[in-house]
Image (cartoon, rainbow, N blue to C red; front, side, top):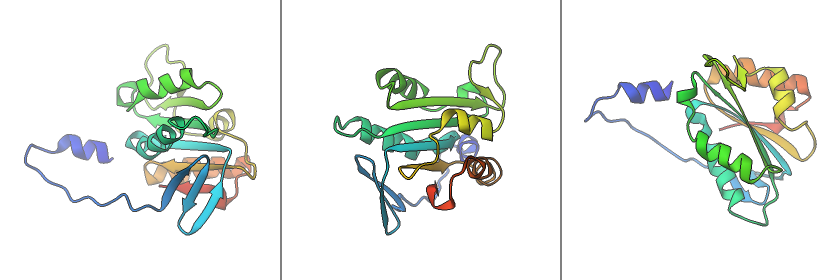
Length: 170
């Protein structure tokens, strides 16, 4: 993963980066611009893996700063271990502060004893239990390793009844 690559870098190493490229843009108050299309959503689901939390976090942060934005967010965040969870304190604080608007669920490959969330890969049961049901005003946004999206997220969401045009990848 990208995080492991960064961890292996030495001081003085460099990388080339590009972005953000603006394929998916949050316009505020549930409005998204995706490519040339625009849509208005009441409920947004996110499935993120590791550092893939970044775009979801940015969208939720923007929405929660606006008292007139009533968009509801549900997040499944997948990581290898509990110590790998980025922004956990902030996400948990939002879930407490905005209990009707922010729902957060974690899943770990290697869960510690007593872990109160899921263990293992994202699956249909997890998606049904922790993401909005497919409606005309709900969509799912994903950011994470391509195999997670291709083999875990998309099949689970399709079984829930999501159409391909309701599924978006950062």
